[in-house]
Length: 410
Image (cartoon, rainbow, N blue to C red; front, side, top):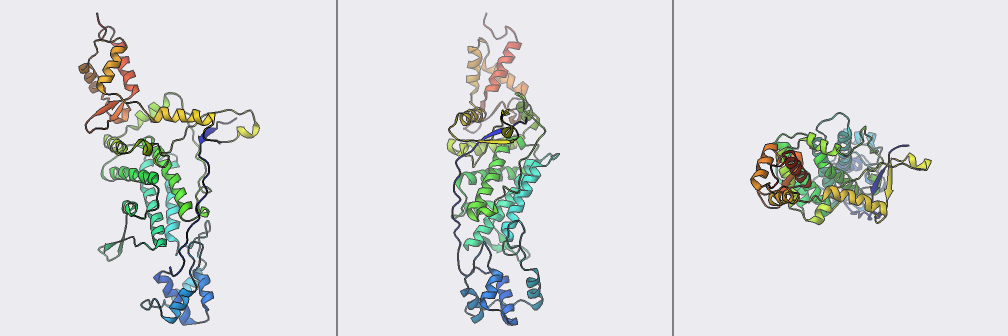
C-alpha cells in the first residue's frame, strides 16, 4: 500500500462565460496581409475571414469589406508577395496543444509556457535556488497573461515614451495590477504583490534558500494563474493536463520540519520583507487561499485495493476529515505571539521566580535568537518591536532547567 494525501477542497465553481469582443480587432500585420490578398485577387471576403478567425478572436466580415473599400486602414501598406506566400505556406500555424495561433495568440502561448517552465523548474531535482527561479519566471507568465487580456479588451498597455532604440515600452506586472480594469481578484493580487516584493529582494540583494518560507505562496500563485487562464480565456487553456503530481523521496517526521527551517537559514532582509508585507494584511487576507495555499499531507492506509493506489484523496469541507486537516493548518499558521515580558512571566509561572528580563536579553543575544531563520519569533505589528513564539518559551524553560537552582527562589 502507498501513502496518500488528504487535501481539503472547495465546491467546484462554474467557469464564467467568456465575453468575446466582436468587430474589427485586426492587427496591422494582419491588415497588411489582407491587402496583399486583395491585390493578388481570387479571395472573397468570406475566404479571407477563414484565415483570420480563431477561437480567441472572431472578426466580423464587415471588417474585410471596409479594408477592400478603403473605409478603414488606409495608412497600412500591403504586404509583399514574399510575406503573403510565407503566411499562406505556414497557415494554419497553430499550437498543437491548444489550437492557439502562434502569431495572433503569441502572448497567451508565452504566458502558459512560462508558467509551465516555472513549475518544472521548481519541481526539478537537484536545484538549489528553486523559489527564486520560480518567482522570476512566474512574474513573466503573469505579465504576458495580462498583456494578452489588455490587448483583447482594447486597453493600450504601452508607456508614452519609447526605448532608446525607438521600440514600444510595455507595462511591467506591477503597473498591470494597478490598472483600474485589472481582472485579477484581490487575493490573487495580494499574492502577486507579495511575490514582487520578494523578487525585488532577489534582484538587489543575494538570498540563500527561501523555498520553505514561501512555498505556500508559490502554490497559490500556480492555482491563481490556472484559474485566471480559465476565467479570462476559457477552460480549454487550463494547465492541469500538462502538470502531473510531483513525487518526492522524503517523508516527514515530527522534528524534520523544524530542522528544514533551520537548514534554510532564511536571510534577515527577506524575513523582514515577508513580515512587513504580512503585517499590512488583515486576518481575512492572510487566510485567503488565493494569497497563501497550504496543503496537509496525511499518510493513510486503505482497506480497499482501489483506494490504496491513490496518491491524493479529496475531502469535502465541513466533514470530520476536513476539520482535522484544518486544525493541522491552523496549528502551523496561527502562531501565538508573546512579548519579552510575557516570556519572563511564563518562566516565573513555571517556578523560575528569579528569571528576569535582563536574563532573557542575555539568553537571546547569546543564542542569536532574533535571527528570523531560526524560527523563534518575528517582527511585531509595530516598527522596531519583536515578538516570540511558543518554541522560544520552550527553549527558555530548557535553559532554566539546565541552570539548576539559579532561577529558583531560595
